[in-house]
Length: 85
Image (cartoon, rainbow, N blue to C red; front, top):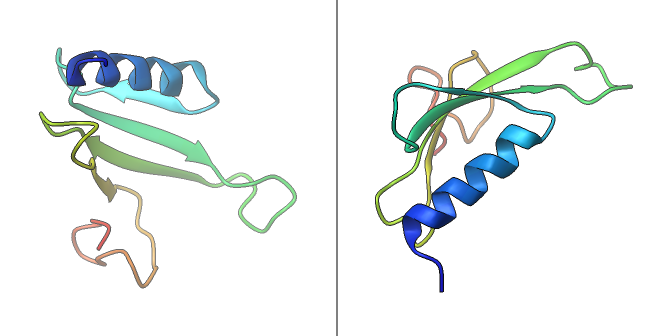
C-alpha cells in the first residue's frame, strides 16, 4: 500500500502530464491551481476555468478542497468564495 505522500506525487504527476495546465503555488505538493478548457464543439469552446486545489495531509483518504478562481454560476458553487458545496 502506498503512503499518502506517494499518492499525492503520483496523482499530481498524472495531472501535470495531462491536457490540464497545473501551476504549483509553493514548494509543497499540497496546493496548486489547475486550468482547464471548455469542451470543443460546445458553447464553452475557447473558455478557460481555473480552480484551486488543496490536498489534505490525509489524502487520498480525505478528499481535496477545490474552489473555482474563475467566476462561475452553478448551484453547487458558492458565488462569493468559489468553493464547491
